[in-house]
Length: 84
Image 1: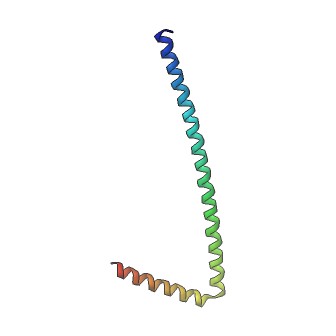
Image 2: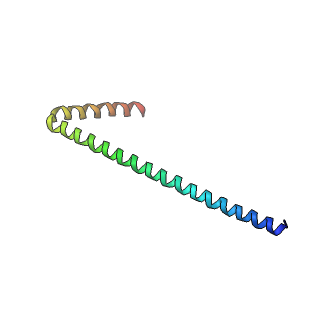
Image 3: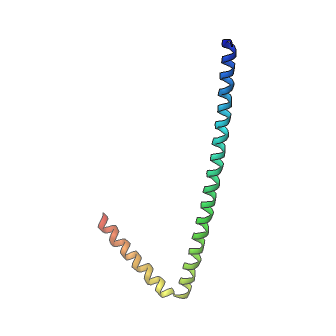
């Protein structure tokens, strides 16, 4: 084998490695995008469900909900003042 053949073989192997690496990175990227999309959909569903439950509770017991909101505001104000 002469030097030109070795050089060509090394270049071809480098191109094959780059193609394989790019393909693998593309697959990983697609898989991660799909996982993020599924997680986002699950989170959106959970937040929607929680919102519906909270809305139902407020409609059923508006005074309790207002008292709870007031109590949470009071506690947050105390914490904020204590931290500053």
